[in-house]
Amino acid sequence: MSLISRKSVWAALIITALFSRSAVAHGHGATRLDDNVVLRGKVVNSVNAAPVRGALVQLLGEKPRAVLSEADGTFSFDNLAPGDAVIAVRKPGYFSAREYYPESVGEQHVHLALQMPAIELKLFPEAVVFGRVMNESGRPLEGFNVELVRASAGRSPADRPQSPIPTAVTNENGEYRLAELHGGNYLIRVERKMDANGPIALFQASKFRTGYPAYFYPNVTDPSSATPVRLAPGKQFEANLRLASQPLYRVTGSVQGASGNGPILVVLVAPHDENPVAAAAILPGLPSFVLEGVPSGNYLLGAIQPQEGSGRGEKTGIAGQIEVRQNLEGASIVLSEQTRVAVRFRYQFAQSTGNPAEGLGAPVSLQRTDLPMEVNLFSATLMPNPNSPDEAVEIGLDPGTYRAQLNVQPNRCVASVKSGIVDLLTEDLVVSGEGSVEPLEVVIRDDCARIAGLVSKEGQPSMGRVLLIPEDVPQRHVSMAANSDGAFEFQGLLPGKYLAVALDGADDLDLSDTETLTKVKARATPVELPAAGTANVRLQLETLEP
Image (cartoon, rainbow, N blue to C red; front, top):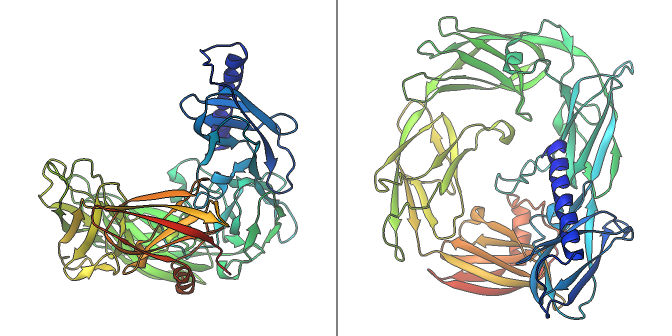
């Protein structure tokens, strides 16, 4: 969320809080005789326990209320009816516990009753990265992008945090500041900002013979040699970088396999970056391309040609990884049409009648596994035709390798995704572009199971990240946060044997790592989920040793 939109949302919430306070003060709305519960509390900084003034405290329930914390961090709600509610706290420059640890911290419940004790709400201060970007002579560099890259690149797409990471541009003094940062391990990357406002910037050939490649803190161009920065709540980290000008090179080559009159876009992308280092637009009759201003490094070279009016999708080609250490000539990209693949849905329904596709959406996505995640723009969704759910649908796949990723839905569970003998839940589907692909068969069941449970620590309800891992296919694990009552619930699960575990402080957990998965399994509780049934479990909060 941009700074402007965050400020707009905050202003609207403040107005709501003040109106709520005014309405209560002037007696608007009927007050019942039993509405005499008082909820008091304090908002504090999680790092030093200092009171936080002006935090928006919201009481969510049948009658929502909101107040701002006082100078000493205290707040109170009067004239409340007994019952259950959810309480939340927000303030610019801070994160709530749920925002900071979304996989481990669930809703904060309050059980309203007479003479209830005061509660404490913690806010986690933002981390900040700041510094200057200079050239080798110490002259400030203006107009350079500075951004953070999560160092946990090995995590699967389902495990990666989804929140956007702020970026900054250096000013005339080479200064930058990155705020509103969560904790975690990051690489700091600096690269020149494109000058133009639109996509035409991609096609403007650079005539410079020297320039600056992408740099990583502390002053290296290879991300594998970069030093990760560990950010914690409230941490201020100064990172100054000196960039050395390097020769820029030219990459030339040709594109084969184009058809029609549509233009072809050729792009050169670094494996760690989704933004092109260089790009050019060419026509099918003039298949040669020139990419100027390329720093030394390793890149992926590819091209794409949209097909106009044919209904066949685009043609794409990836030449693979190339190494640029000097001017490179003769690079070749071969375009291929998307392979058309039939997708059939088979329904094993025991509970439902009527249209099996009603409300189903897209239960499966295909994700490329042969490209770095940062440049993975190729994917496909599999969903039945809601008007003819038993008829095969057709999708187009670019040459590459794919694996199925399930989209959890409450009352439908995917039993299998196969192409012939290839199980896409555990194996890669290889699309060569030179032959056909066996139809995909997606089996969907409606006798899905659910699991509900409680997490506790030393006999008291506890929040934590709850992981549910299928014994036979660990890659299909799911995760959620327990709320302040320790409660959690998973729905839309395939019947079978699972391992359940609740972990403390495990938002950054990487289950694709075999050693980590083994440690998690050793602390897990076996659970068997019957078809269309419910299992109830009690889990002790575990701490995973490093």
